[in-house]
Length: 436
Ligand code: 5AD
Ligand code: SF4
Image (cartoon, rainbow, N blue to C red; front, side, top):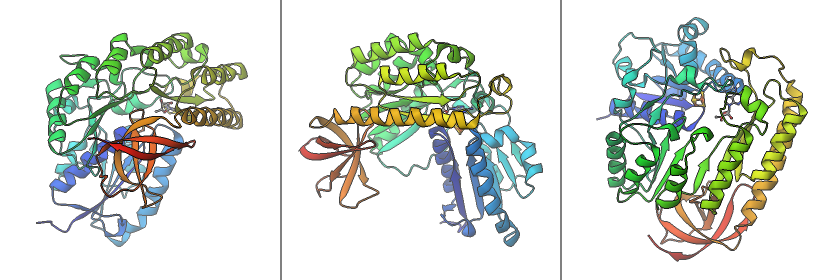
């Protein structure tokens, strides 16, 4: 029996946060709360926040401001702030906004269970070494594709990045615990799993990351295995061969370059040069010709000259990524880069960013065009958001394809389609053959 209590959950940030929100929802659902889209109906409002760039922070604070009047109207309403801003701000958050009831860092989601049973524990931002052993309930809305944590935290301390400060040191989850979650998901009908970690290729338990992929590849029912994010410095030949040889491991890797200038990469503390990165890309492409490689780029890191920016432009042309996420550099309090000399003006950052995005847009479109008339296997995700007469799915290389609706095709089916038209952000296909 549901207890009529409702929760409203707002998520910002990366896939790690999206999955953390599935655990937050899992805890609340297991305590008989139901989700509501309407904050006015809620008994508890949870913000799962991101602090990777200042803009993400601002978005949260403006949403928080909009919620404040609700608390006055409904004094019993609880407001909880989770995620990376919560971790960073801790106590300061309560001082800044005294209508907040709870502050819960990303390593302490489990305390939510106690909080709703009204333990007065308002702040939970300590280091949690037991995080890898915590089996929290997960409330997944997608019945076909699942996120799953394989490791937590980060040891790399890239000089621009807040993550090591908000998510703590690297901790890998045990192989058996991951494998049993994947087996359970397969039993529930899931077809695809995405292994999550800040730096998945430095995974280490009784096996290394390729060893983990090998174990998971043998689990019946799961058809596709993806993983994010990989650090270029840890891209081993063994991993390249794992992608090549294990049939369920998809031919896609997200490999953040950040800058095409080795001078800037050094200042970023990335631990590879552009030439080493390129070497890895060439190896990946020669062993797995169909592989899609996506990346992240930061525009206007401190000390970035026009010449460094030209190196990034050159890199994008030389590598031909399938897609990138690119952002202006945003100084984060407490990071080394925020204290460096040579901060770049915002308008210079933005004009460099536009050049990066325009160039990459053309490259992405060109690469997609090369798929016209080619057969691709797609996993059907459901109806297209834009049209109820179309279905969408993704290729193994993670490209979105829309196909005309046919009654015999269901969510979770793997079908072969012929790509008929390529656009910048998606592909259109026609269904010809069918197999599962
Ligand atoms: N400013 C801009 N972009 C950043 N990223 C991480 N920290 C910052 C920052 N301070 C980007 C990186 C990373 C992605 C997740 O976010 O490109 O790979
Ligand atoms: Fe994810 Fe990093 Fe944002 Fe935290 S700060 S939510 S780890 S992107």
